[in-house]
Image (spheres, rainbow, N blue to C red):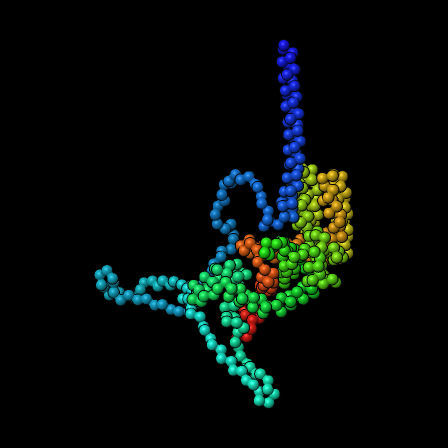
Length: 438
């Protein structure tokens, strides 16, 4: 009887163990599938704007002492030069009515104030038309009338409120009504920024031409929605110019459109295959490489060694850029660093988990150290990533664009704003100067 009971217990637990093993196998398969799906959205190449981090709340640390550190230069706002003078005087005491003499102290207070909302200037342009009695041609008197109903100052302000202050049409309309008492509909605002974009088209093309002639260009791209469909926002950035283009494609034809097929300068970029046509003049981005290496080191403890080695090589590249030795020495250093990268790649290839990353390192061997020889080139693509941030913020605010025409307006005006700022110019005055006369 006892033996029968024991056998039933054993059978019960054997069945339970088989069920649990099947359950574990199912959960492992599900976990692996979910990990693969998550990697599509959260990986070292995911831009920070789309990254969702699930991090446990850290323990609150003891707050540091507030204020600037010792030795920090004090910031003081410069006092503006007064444009008006307000004098005050008392002849008698308000308490006992005694006569007051000379003041024993003079207090001076500087007040800075904006003017009261100003009424707009409404200018009526009277333009005579003639018919020549001799040649019978139509002659129009020379004039400074604007193209459209709104003048240059107002048009430039509207464009900047939209693409620099990041205001939606409704808030632009509210602001103009509050400050100037002028009412403009959303459609009216759209027409104004469209005319501004048309006026800046020549400057936009000039920026592209300057970039085509540059010694180095930093390129990056990110996704943007137009009418709910995926497009790509590209930036081509130099140290003095920045051009944005919005296209359906993420392929090499966009690069060819802006730079041409025979660009002679250096392109700093990530490892996207679209840049392969310019394989003789590339600098691969170290920031992308190190981000991916860091992600691997967090998943696999044994990869920490390789991550530290890669960081060490990157630090050597930065040191060379600080005080570049003669060209011959730089070539020797490049060859030495390249051999070290090959050795690292070979060691990584021995681990199945790291083979894909090792292949990436080996495929880019000719492009990791271009900046060692061409010292005017940065080892990372951070310049292009920073150029994209402003439009990424706008993408977060507006969500997306409705039409391709709106994309054209955006790329033209934002390119001009960014380029003029990089050159230290006055954006408002530049836009005014490009608008119609009047």
